[in-house]
Image (cartoon, rainbow, N blue to C red; front, side):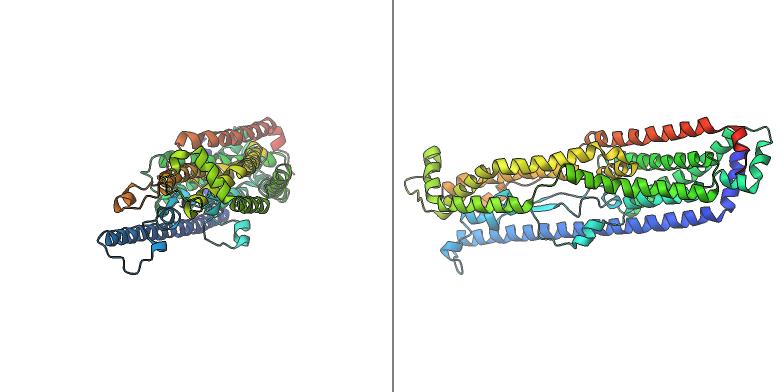
Length: 480
């Protein structure tokens, strides 16, 4: 078998197709990594900018407090005093909750251009600050970005099919197959050797390019969980490549011409990576339509207007329910800060069922998408690669849960001080809650990726097994 492999490698190396394959794969991978690294660089620059803005703003506010402590009130009006807790918690001292990029983020942009990766948290309702200020071309968002995941899902199969569409048919058409099989060699061994040589070439190229890409994009492989993610990424891509090789072998065994094989395989590629995913997306949005954000915004606005009209009554009722928050005999039912908090809580309370239903419908849509992603290998591979790169919707949901907790702790820190009419001090700035993102465990990510590996392995084994049952020397000797 080693002699057959050596001979096949010499033939393959002399073929211009392999050289074209190598050039195209390297060029496409390099461009995909460049785009992914550029996007990560943009995110890093944005995070650095907002972090600098926060540090500068907090330092400036602390300097102003120190100046006031010395009795210097020049240029500071009473209604704009930095000592006011309400203004500090809603504007002056607000902090950013930042979602850092994952080690393999440059491999797949994924959902990172759709979901916020930094949020300026304040005392106000979450709905008032959940969106960031960046504006993106919707055409770019709809089309997606050219990255390593795109190369893997859409273009790697085409390169594999270009190497293997005439795996057997070319020898049958040139008349060399009968000559080969006239020797004391098994037909299955001949085809298996051809397949393994090509699989080794593609697999070696994939592993080398993934490792080189991780180094060139600055992936921090020392980060906990980075190496397991990289290993799983490589395993997913190799299994995806094996699936396409198995399909090519099966088509070749059918004794069609090389041109016929090319048409069949291109049709299969079109169905797997274009047609089925398009039908899948249409079916998901039809079965579980996205909730209307316009309706949600309208409902929030209506609830806010109603609560504002009843602000004084709501504040009085709040004091009856929470006498400990009255802050002494000077409680003012028309106080703007306390009234705003009560109005906000009333809006949040009245909108809770609507927001819960909104989130439930989004989660139901995502659950349905996860359940039926195995309709196409391309869909399941895309979901796995986004998960491993840290740009999937699941990671952003993980971030949103932590953001909710931080927002709650921010309100719990400020609300009692606002009701108590406390004044901000320089020591308070050091005691402010700070956001620390806790990354998902590798086990949690792997639990979503393992089904993809099994979902690729099963059809690959079935295709290979079906092809093996048709590999008969008598059938292969027949010419087309």
